[in-house]
Length: 240
Image (cartoon, rainbow, N blue to C red; front, side, top):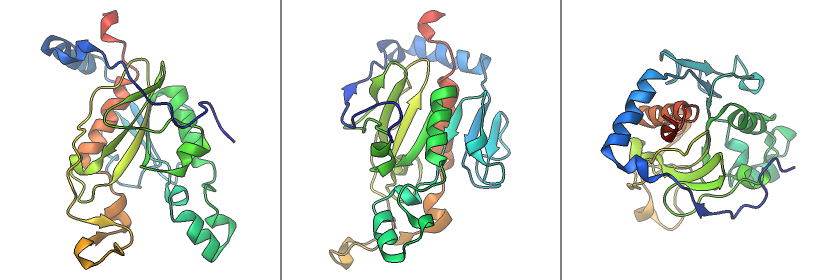
């Protein structure tokens, strides 16, 4: 079942706006964000993890069940990704069980997508996630934000640019009343890898990280996601 946008190859440049390139506009934007602090809900986050203990952030872990979030704040959504990856079909074929069926995440991604659309903010998932196709979302392409409709943009960013030890290519979906700001689009090669060893030989392998170390959000990346969520609800600078 597709919700909302149909077709996965929409890929036109988003009008980020020339005003963001000027020092004057950047300074005005900083003042706006200081004067208009917006509370943010962080959905599907680890209990006692990096989103806890931050002023202005309302963290929703497994105990609170982020599928029940009903606003009113913009969100940073990290819905579970295990059943949306390339290995999900392989694991299901090998082990069976409805709990292993690809995409059977209990409605987490669906609820996260609705929260971003209803309240603004940003949703994060691994690059090449099957959830994008399932929900008819436009795939990122190239470097930078790509606009899908007047309120929605997508991009690919590497978390290695924000301190993760692996490349960790990530797709973002942003929904807001104005265009998102530019991110760090650099793609530094990580010192580690996530997942299985490269079958092309020992020389192509790096130290492997897994579990919490692999899924952890670097603090610098967390901070930029929170800023995006706040930014999604602030008035356009051209309206000031």
